Amino acid sequence: MIEQALAGETRRPITSGRRSNLVDLVKGLAIILVVYGHTAQGVVHRGWWSGPWADFSKAFIYSFHMPAFFFASGLFVFGSIQRRGPAKFTLEKMKTILYPYLLFAGISAALGPLIRRFQMSYSPFHWNAFLMNVADGSGSWFLFTLFWCLLLALLTVRFPNWLRFLLSVLVGMAPIYGTFHTDRVWQEFCFVAAGMWVGNHVFRLEDIPKWKAAVGFMLLAAFQFAAIYFYGFVDRWTYIGLGLTGTAGLFLLARLLENHRIGEALVWVGRASLAIFLLSAFAQGATRVVLSDLLHTNNLWLQLLLPTAFATVLPAIVWYQQDRWRLGWLFHWPL
Image (cartoon, rainbow, N blue to C red; front, side, top):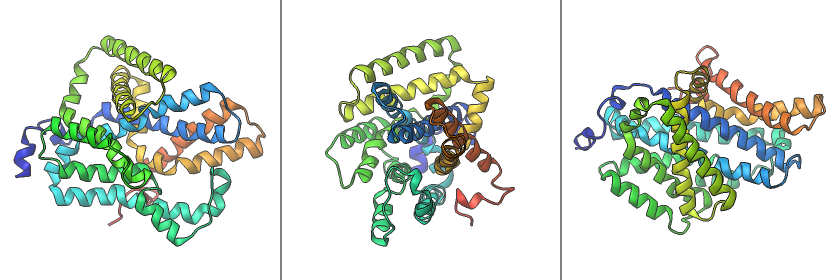
């Protein structure tokens, strides 16, 4: 029985339904980096920022911010499967991950002619191209990849943790399967597997003294900085290694900020990370219009920081007001 296989993996607190501020704080940090990364891409594309520090900024952020999301998702897989069972687990992921993926693929296609000025590339709508993009994950590679990674987690739930992680690393290092976006499933699953391996042990971070968390964070941050600065992304091994060390650094930083006002704000952001991921592009574009067309400024810091701030806060407000504004259908299946 799957329930018996999970028994040793899902003792309190994960199976208790307890919400982890540490994990939400990490998600808050990671989603801000996602928004900043997208904003920086737009700034670079428009020629407002160039040079080695622009390249370093992108490489540094992308070395760990998405692995952190996949790792965090893996932490709760055992408990979620145990509470719901395989069928309900799959249905729930279809409602909360696959559904918004398909919905926003359609919304983006419908709004394409209106928002193409904010996009780095634009192609006129064609049904065949649209359906192919949706099928291979081009509509939104993260949600597509996360959905299939969680189904892989379900299929391998009986595996020993070490074996699942080892196989995920070996498969992730193999030549590309299919398209770039479908290959991301194999590449990112190792982080989900690592999260499943850690499981409820992540809550031991709460017992680490903050001075130790600060020292550990600074050491990992220095390592991450030096590795990217001197070597960059060499291959998939580098991506896996830096993804894991960067994620560990984020969790130590989260422990350092826990129970602080900044940490509480990041928890607030982290719990709204889905809405921020889905809606941030619209807020970014609107803020950039105000800066460029109304205020007539291409100042680098304004173009980096203000779109990042508004694209984080405004979608989060929508998330927390979704029931009052009857917008829950944007983020999960309405029935």
